[in-house]
Length: 159
Image (cartoon, rainbow, N blue to C red; front, side):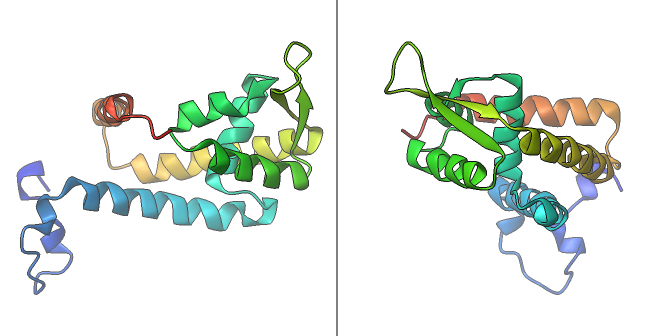
């Protein structure tokens, strides 16, 4: 199917979309839902969500990272990051320790349990994304990433 003829109308030919097919957020939201719902089901056994896995991923790569840095990266409010971190800490995936330089700022470290969970989750994510992106050529995948990152970088911060 060529790009010009691709439309969600093909999924429901009898449904009048009244221009909804031209709203980018609908398409991004549906793709996001497809990816996240599949991931959430597969990550249930590990008691983590996709966002929590992303936090584990960043903490693993940046031992001692502050919650404020995670908040800026995800462009979400600090209390929201705190809730994710709190659950990861309660489940034994992360530990939070005060900074030696600034006792008010705590750093995050991944535990052995968190590391094992992250290893399993990465495999699930790579497999799932590979399946989801299979219809795209390597050039289309690169362009998709470029455009999504461009939108992310241009979005205003929410804190």
